Image 1: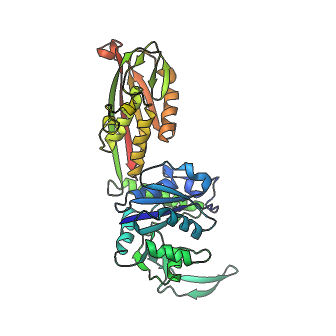
Image 2: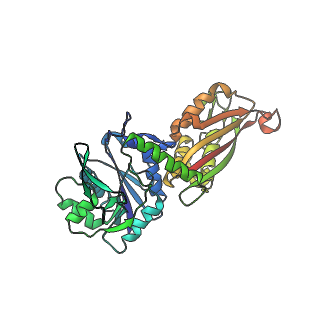
Image 3: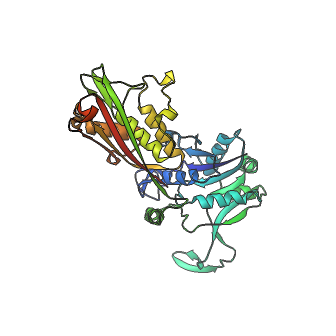
Length: 384
């Protein structure tokens, strides 16, 4: 039995402004879509996420365990059906459908909707209307609308998988949300208490409010929804025959090379271990044993990409990487910017979040004698 989520991110909403669709715009240090994905990855019961995207935007989200993608349709209902089809055959019994433009959703609300499905075929969060309601005509108040029994609908909306799949198959045309589709099929929908902060970004002003909400959560301190971790890494490789050394993904000319089971990129190895360390996942040797011949001569970006995938799969994001290379020669300074750019490209980060620097050991020890190169690194990850 599997609980899955469908995140609808194929929309082209324009009211929010900006050169790109709102899901790809920046919000409190990340993209809107990143915040939404982190919330669902942090919800313990969610095992699979089906992310519905525009076909030409599939490459804008890094692959990760438990994440599948589907091409969206012309309408919201079409996109939901695409997500349902992507999940078909995966043993899903509960499914949540969520609008990507609600990035302030919490793992607690996600869990509450899932729990409500134990007793109902459908459940959705909502907030009772407390304001007075008017009907308007030509810019003037034309009447009063009683607010008793009225609710503001939110997502994620949860359903028995087979029930909502059949309801969508029988539903003609589009729908405002999946509760409408469920009710048209005769499915009773339970109301789960919603969250006033679970706003949907619709206009440009909503970005400011969402950013305040997310930053306030960060400042409130560690919780089940907020976590900062730092890991460190250290690696050493000796010199051997060769005409260059690989350092942080850049081939640096030198009269010797570095020896190792892989390409011996001492800097990238230290950074990879720092990321694994932040997640308490051991070191490179645990994930890529040197006893396995398939890793002989492997390029170290394979290891770094794997560590980044592990970070994302657990709902974290990398906020900073710092690497220090320790050697007398070759000179690192002329290549440091290229190394930063290469690491940033592999890790999917802005180069401003990656630091590469070098120092000597004042001719002391094995690095001082020119026998090899050492590297130490630190990496910080944060959730959400």
